[in-house]
Image (cartoon, rainbow, N blue to C red; front, top):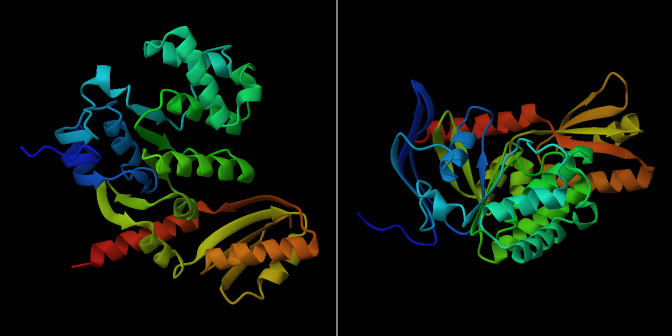
Length: 317
């Protein structure tokens, strides 16, 4: 059997079934260094693929190599892979620093080395000031950061992140995306799951689109971006002058639909050019002194883009 390249994450004809239920089927992948995003709604196979990558489950058939490490050899494997799950689970009463230190001690690091690595990770995610507070008192965004700090503390070669930007405010998202870029530039493999295509566009070098356990598309993020610009994206904005924002947005040619919330404090805008809209939105907000409470891509339309991409792949000869 040919030996996979040592700088690739390789899946060879990998399938996973849960009884009669399909997890993923006949996956063949070679993922290089950089940032790769797994895209798809719940049930598409993202979590199964990540669990296979981390060795939490074994494939029904096929072979997996993460660089030159095998998930079925955990004693060596987990020294090279970092995993940040989307679920929160922390020991009662533990502080952020102790959470990371305990993890490093399990890996066999001596106390001094563990403290040094923990401090380094806390600085990278901007959590040094809150490190000695109990995690139970953290916000959702802070819990996301401390999980990420734990995942990177042992300096893994591969970082696997399940919805890592959930709960982060815009400034924190920008900081964490910058950290991902830094780690990628250092040669690390970063594999991220997401269902927000606009975020994937900002983060990724490469995208894998999954549908019902199959990889439907695999390639450069620019190909997904092209489709996003021809298919409407819904953007939900909560603000104090929603009516004024809506009337200003109507002047944009690429805005195809606007819906006001019943409380008049929010507006749902459909646009065929998300990048152009975000640029104009900043000008509107500054010009009219609008206080924006939140801005998110609405899931329903993200899934519409996803279904559009999947149907295009399915129609290909």
